Structure formats: structure tokens, C-alpha cells
Image (cartoon, rainbow, N blue to C red):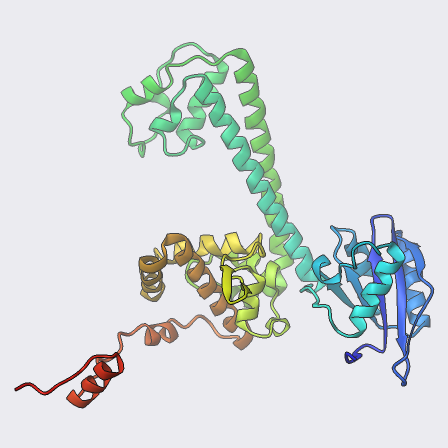
Length: 411
């Protein structure tokens, strides 16, 4: 019989409008009794009643299934009075064909009392708020990129080739020329709008704007530019709020800034994703696996089906990949470039970048755990070429014989 870890625990099946809770109580004779399943709405008043009901039954351990965003209000109310465990749906899925809301709650309580559910990492409230704002900032950046692509489509269908003569179509000179095109679609001289750092000649730029924007495309482009200005204002206000929330974590952020390729906003984003307390992760390997930077284990009958990295870490993984791309170009840290080049020769660029991202995350884990800055010497010691070992004649003969060769004395 599996060992019972939680003598009194509760399983909660979470839905959008209501939750179903079931308390499992195990006595000294290891006999488990289940309470009558109770329904509670997801209004704050009923969630407080749920907390009071758990307290009346002396239940401190609660397990719930991760269901979209609907678990967050329940978690926010119960985390002050209970030890809440959030389970991934694949660990708490009930048997097919015998699945109801009441049975789901009982099943979650039954497997949780045996400690058969692996809880998800939930950071403290202040870190969760920082994470939410930074992820919103990422979404705004994606919206901005989408609007830039739509603006470029307007230029393309209007036969205006600004992207051929400007490295940044939304830079100062290109934006001034675009504004002039929207004011009046008649031919004009581009020379007054050019700056000193433009590589293309005035003649090439003049030929690039020799197109015609119809009224519909011009109106679309005006709306896009207006939306981009609004997004820039939103991002500026959001960055101010992020800096305010991140102030308590400035010591940890300053430590992460010592890692090659990591800038201020990236450091705040990393803190928002993994938090500042590394005791929640057993080892650096556990953290890298949580971030989706380690190969999968998918083996059956002695055959490995795949070793691809998982889909986990949808926010922190792209961020670390960007930092890795910056780190391999940093001349002050050759140990990272050497590691990248060594892996790239064998496995290619993409796997080498993932290896560097995992290397950076491992360094961040140890930096936060030991409260020490990045130390490049630890990598450079292991990066040294090993000393060539001298092999004697007897050792060479033994090696050849072990490989199946017949060694005889020369006449």
C-alpha cells in the first residue's frame, strides 16, 4: 500500500464559475473517509467560505488542477491559510469514462494524499505581479512588430522601396519621408529629409520613393502609425511600473547583470520568471528542465524516440536565447564563444545556442543561490586544453591488443 503523506487534505476541481472540493481524512488505522463534495462559486465571498470550511475540518493541505487562469482567484484566497499545490492537468487527469466534477475532486484528493502529484512552481505574490507586467510588455512588443510588418506591406503594394535603401524603415529619416508621402502623394525632393549616417545615395532614395500610395493604403498607414505611437506610450508607462515593482529585487538584478549578454530589462524579466529564491529548485538541472532547455527522455524498449527540448519556458527560453546570441559576440568573455564554437562544430548553430542559454541559466542559478557575481575563471579553468599524456610502449601494446590487434616483435 502506498505511503500516506497527507492525513488530511483537500482536492479541488476548478471551473470558471464554480469549484468542487472534497476532503480526504485518514485515521491511525489508515482508513480514509471522504467528505461530501461541496460546490462553491468563484465569487470572493464563496471562496472565503471555502477557506472557512477547510479550517473547520482542520485541513491545511490543498491540491487543485491548473485550469487556464481560473485557478488564480482560488489560489489567491487560499494561499494565506493553506499550503496550496497546483498540479499540471496531465498529473491529475482522472480515468476516462468515469469522469465527473465530484469524482475529479475525490480523485485529486486521493492521489494527493499519497504525494503522487508534482506541484508546479508558483512564485511569491510580488514576483507574480512583476512576471505579469513583463509578460504584458512582451505582448506589446509583439503587437508593435505586427504593426511594423503591416506598414511594410503598405509600402510593398504601393511600389515604395524604403526597405531597400534604409536599414530601419521606422528611423528618423525614413519616418520623415513617410510623413511627407502621406501629406501629399506628388513627387518631391528627398534631400532635405536625409541625415548624415545614411549609406544610400540621394539618387537611390529618390528612386525608392517613386511609387504611388492610393487613398485606401494611405489611410491604413495613418492608422498603423497612430497605433504604433499609442503602443510606444503604453510601453513607456508599463516600463515605469515595472521599474517600481522591481526595486526590492535590485541586489539580485545587479548580480544577474554581471552575466555576459544580460541587460537591465532582461535581468528583471529573469527575476520575474524564476524569482530570487533558488531553494525552490533542487539543482540547476531542475531549473534548466523547468525552463525547457534540456533534452527530453522518451525511451521505450531500449529505443530513444526523441531528444528534442520540451515546450516549457515559453517566456524565459526565448529571452535566454537572445541573451546567448549577445554573449557569444562578447569579446570580454571568450569562454562562452569557445563553448559555442565547440558545440556548433558537432551539432549546429541552433543546438549550440540552446547549450549557451542553459549555460547562462546555470550560472544565474548559482549566482542567486551563492549571492556571488559571475566568475568567468570557473569556466576558463575547465576550458583549458588538457595536458598531453605520454604513453609508454607497454601501454601502447596493451591498448592495441585490447582492440583486437596482434602485436609481434619486429625481426
